[in-house]
Image (cartoon, rainbow, N blue to C red; front, side):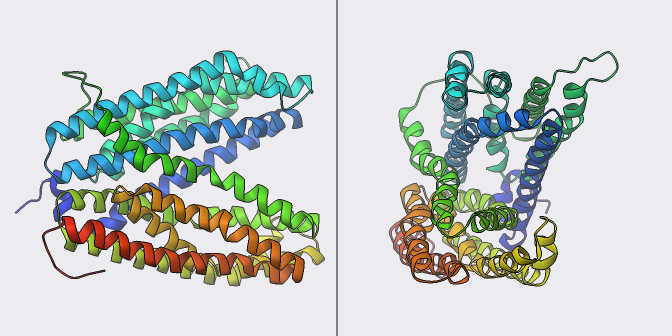
Length: 458
């Protein structure tokens, strides 16, 4: 019998469903990273000051992404849960309130773009050219930021019913359009004038708005279970609370990368400036590798949340099991590749002979932590899927601040740089032990008590 698309979350074999949802997300993450890099490449051709202005704008862009993605995580989890419960009325109300939250988020950044951009850059630089470039760029990105907020929220509507390929297509369209428009709008083409750094901003928001339009069309045509409608709209504070109960910790977690980089740099700066640059390279490599885990992460949340709502313990168990298997395999393969290719990777960063040895050792040591880090990230997703965002936040804080920074500081004071890198492994191992304890606690309190099917345990 042919299976309906809408039943994919409860009928598709989990070992197939996890990669089916994860691969498109991973691809979209890669694409997002690609067009961010290309933006920087083109802007650098304007001038060094233009590139500096772009760098100073990054915290605001990161904040927009953190708020939209964090809200999206909450929407995904709550929406998937009510889809599993067959609560069509609740699903519609959640979707309506999610769109309201996207609009409110946009209004905040619209106000910033209109009235706060100049103050923001005045506090960071007294260079007039950098100030002018920065205000031009961030004003456009925030005033027209409705594209990114609505795009990310609506893509969660599709992800919650297992249609991950569709939102990947929308992201690809937005990213490719951005890449094509970048050189045209920055440097001019034919009758199109050169807009400079404003052109990069225009290309960014046009790409985001295009992706938003496409995702709206896809949701309208291919997702009858989550309707975008203003009919009988009511503000439901209970659903908004549930969304942010899961989403707020995710927002905070998205912002922790800047904290960890700052903290580690302060510690390593006491050793040498080359230690800071070495960590910067390792951090970029790590972010690239973790895109696979983040993709699996985004598959785990809706599947577990859906089947938690459907009270199907067996599929929850299978989802966690296969997510961990796929995640750990990807991390082991990545570690092996980095152990082998570390010299070639570090040579690509124009390392001197002396620095090359230091950086190869650093990458090889830090990469060993990926097995435990991947496990910790996926357990955080398990907590989010069950609506327990606080435990997810606890794991993040442990990983990047409470455990890592003190250990790195102590090792840096007592031993040489090579031993200091071991702090990353120690931190992830300790966090993994705590993650297991919390996961068992949450599983017993949530899954076992709520679900009626008593088939197997994690």
